[in-house]
Image (cartoon, rainbow over all chains, first blue to last red; front, top):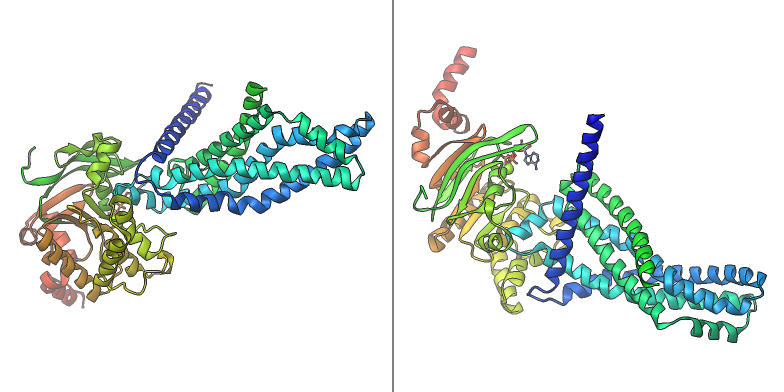
Length: 261
Length: 264
Ligand SMILES: Nc1ncnc2c1ncn2[C@@H]1O[C@H](COP(=O)(O)OP(=O)(O)OP(=O)(O)O)[C@@H](O)[C@H]1O
Ligand SMILES: [Mg+2]
């Protein structure tokens, strides 16, 4: 019994320690953004990696999510005789929830894992030690450009997701199932408020920070985790990183929604 | 400080990894402007010792004094400032594997100085030439041979004209001619720039020509730190045994002959 309690306590302490370390990690990564020398090229490169290469996957997820919303919405709303409200239903669910959350999840899967693996491999092959020995701040050099690129990319990707989704909903709900075009467009326009757009924007920025923070942190400290050596250690860290940041996105989504609604 | 013309001094360093005690009270003065070579069998903790000097590993006990400052107590910016004096070659070279050879060598210049791009190119070209690497500047580390990686690591470490060089096995993996050239280069640049260097090497007795002091690490302590001549004359059994083992052919050929004769 005592042993069990001890184990529990040790586990709790180690989790607290990890959270504290992650806090420090985020702090230095953000400080690194404002440290000279300022270089634009690494940020552009990271925007390419995080943003540009995610375009296709975001485009297709957005399209199909919008289409399925159009389909489901059409039949559900018809039960209440409210087919006209389809535009409003699709727009609100996309802008408020599905757009930022699904974009965040897709980017985590696509980019979060690669960020974690990249940083983790640099850690276990002593490249981060080498940076430190050259008196180059690894946070500034490695992590900060990713944070900036992610903050710039995610809102744009989310916007693309929303627009493509709305068009998908239009395609299915109006063109395919024969709803009213005018009703779709007018309810869509009238129901989305500035507050909804703001919430969408805030969410996507928070998710952008969460993704890079959690995934890079897992990679950066891979050598501190149990059995955190070699390819296996990195692959385990990568899996963890994706799981944790996906859950974190959903939790953060709930928290932000409850605060802003 | 106990040692006046030392730029680095290790005092009573102890370090364990789990149950394994690697360092058990290492005392080692590194004299300014001289070359100290750390020798010892594989797995005795030479690389771990170097990492203590760099502040990458914190000791369980003891102090690492570099230029009057205790590395183990330094935090962020001060440590960074101290490290600007170091030029480091890791045992595994630790090249940035997603950068080309050229970018690897240029990295310290680009990140730490405001040198214009043309000048960086010029300087890197010159170093590449010096280390016989011209023509590989666009290769990635994974496409290099082991010896080439070592030379790229050396080139990178030398870019910012460091005051203190820490080289972990700089010539392991190089052919005899190349390793001779690398030692020649150390010798010449040291004559010119007067830096302090700490070299971990298995290249005995060749390294004796270059070394001002030799430190033997065995069983977690520095058994002796002396000039090569003193080392060879030392009467301590452990040291004698080491000298005889590594220099067997030169010093104990008679004994070996006798043993052989007895065996026959
Ligand atoms: N991070 C670590 N965790 C656990 N043990 C370690 C770690 N680093 C080194 N060791 C152990 O410390 C001992 C000394 O290692 P070190 O790399 O310093 O040897 P070395 O003297 O440099 O050997 P070589 O000449 O082969 O390079 C080894 O037994 C090694 O297993
Ligand atoms: Mg070693």
